[in-house]
Each structure stands twice: as structure tokens, then as C-alpha cells.
Length: 114
Ligand code: 5GP
Ligand code: ZN
Image 1 (tube, protein in one colour):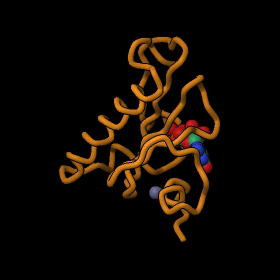
Image 2 (cartoon, helix red, strand yellow):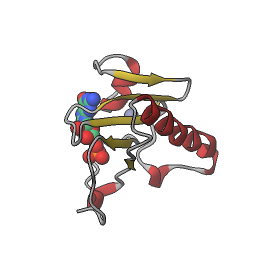
Image 3 (spheres, protein in one colour):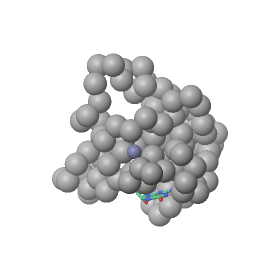
Image 4 (cartoon, helix red, strand yellow):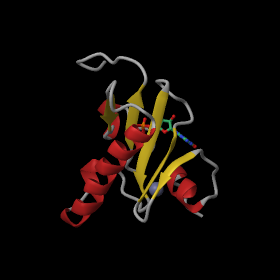
């Protein structure tokens, strides 16, 4: 059994509220939402973070971005706008070391981020 929480979600060992699935990616509700809409988009295949992505992951990375756009539309965020964030390593506060994109929406966000 994997010791990666998100691999276990992919395998169905840990329950999650799924909002999208395709061959390569999965989107599910964040357990501890930071906005009225907070969805995580992940590759099904384990990649630690964007820093570990390779040239061979080019189309997968494109798929993840398009999944964000698709899910945001599904959640009705395309008019109001939303933010897509990926945290990489210590300074960014990454806590789960399986690449994920946060889709945050339903409220305003500050720039620059904290
Ligand atoms: P990070 O801080 O690594 O960018 O984001 C990790 C995110 O994963 C956090 O927003 C956290 O709430 C979420 N998370 C951690 N464990 C679980 C889990 O078991 N299920 C779900 N749905 N989200 C999780
Ligand atoms: Zn993983």
C-alpha cells in the first residue's frame, strides 16, 4: 500500500468527494477548504511536485491545466474568476508531496499572495 495520501485517493483506499476523473487526472474537494470552492487536481501517476516534472510529462501537465479550466467551469467560476496554485517545497508550504493544483474560487483573493 502506498504511503502517499493522494496515491491512496487514486487507488480508492481513502474516500474523497470526486468532481472529475479522466485517464490521467483526478479532481476532488479539498478536505480543509480555504475558499467556498477549493478543489485539488492531481495526476493519477505519482509526481512529487512541479519541480520533479520531466519533458515526458509535457502532455500530462497540459491535461492538468485543462482539467482546472473544465472543473472551474463546472463549478460556475468562469465569470467571477478564480485562482490556480501549486505549492512546491518548503517555502511555498507544500504539505502533500504528490503534485496537485489548487482551484480556489467563490471569493476575492489578494495579490501578491501572503
Ligand atoms: P499543499 O499544502 O501540499 O499545497 O496542499 C495539500 C492540500 O491537501 C491541503 O489543502 C489539504 O487540506 C489537502 N489534503 C490533505 N489531506 C487530504 C485528504 O486526505 N483528502 C483531501 N480531500 N484533501 C487533503
Ligand atoms: Zn502519490
